[in-house]
Image 1 (cartoon, rainbow, N blue to C red):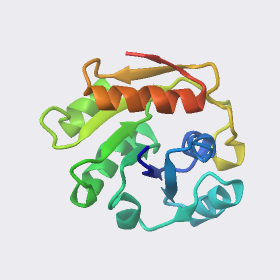
Image 2: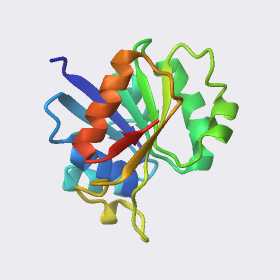
Image 3: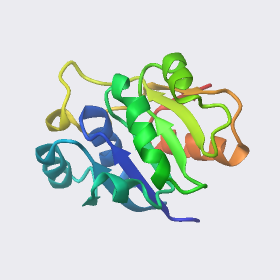
Length: 170
């Protein structure tokens, strides 16, 4: 079973909770994290949401899977900044709640990477890393788009959703 380098950009409620759940995944080699706030990064390390904090370039470079967990409006700009550092095999999972606008902004079709909308429909009234917790996505739908993905990617999506305790809907 291939070990994966996982990167999470945005370590608030969603990114932090993802990291906490994925920390128990048997395929996890390392979870690398980045956030614009150094205080958030330190708290994510303390809570076990990430194994190592790196600068933006280092967190992206060589990652097998990158979770984009920034505010929705920031996703296209963050993705644009990531592109020079992505490996050809990197899978990008965008956990934002909006897809059509983001897909249009980043011009997803024709990219050399697989860029998948992966939206676990869970959360809390209060955001931030201080509210991140294991099991936040247990029992929630995980909306995935587009419907057609490579079989290997489909299997990984179901595996990640299983670790989170969510149910995939394409």
